[in-house]
Amino acid sequence: MAINLEKGQRVNVQLPKFTVGLGWDANSSSTGQDFDLDASVFILGENRKILSDGHFVFYNNLKSPDGAVEHTGDNLTGEGDGDDESIKIDLSLIDAQATEICFVVTIHEAESRRQNFGQVRNSFVRIYNPQTNEEILKYELEEDFSIETAVEFGRLYKRNGEWKFEAVGVGQKGGLEDYLNKYN
View 1: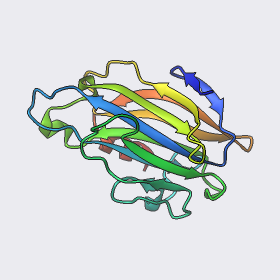
View 2: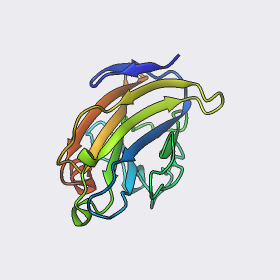
View 3: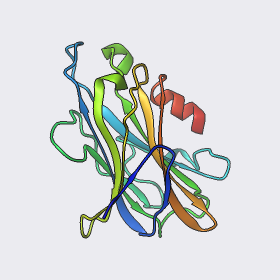
View 4: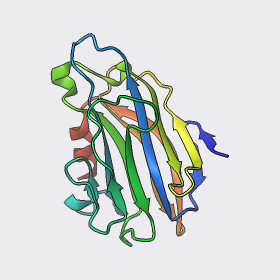
C-alpha cells in the first residue's frame, strides 16, 4: 500500500530500481497557448552541485553518464490521466559521488506564454515498482503557486548509506534557469 506524503515528510526508499512518475493537469489557458511542462533531474554531490553537465537529465539529455537515471521522454501537452513524464532510477548504478537527486518540473516558455503553476492542478510525484506497478509513495502538491514557473516536487538523498525520499513542494519564479544557477 502506498504512503501518501505531506510536504517535508521523508521516507526510506528500499527498492534499488524504481520509476518516478510526475503528473499534472493544466487549467484552460486564458493565454490561448498550450502548457508544456518539463521534468528535469539534478544529480548532486556533497556540495549540492551537479556532478557534471551529463548529470542534469532532461528532455535534451535523457540519460545520466552512469545509466542510473533515465528520462523516458518529453510530454508536450500533459494530456491524459496518470503520469505525464517518468524517470527510471537504478540506484545500483548511481555514481558513488552522488548524494542527492532532485526532481524539478518547469513550464516551458512560461514567461512568453504568461503561464505559471497557479494555472496547474492535480500535480503529483510518485514512486512505483515498474515490475509490479505497485505504488510505493505519492506526494500531491496542494499549494497554490500563483507566480512560480518551476517547482521542485521532491528529492532523493543519501544519508548513512540509505536513500530517502523527501516531499519538497517548493517553487521558484525564475523557471529552470533558477535551478540551473542554484545547482551549477
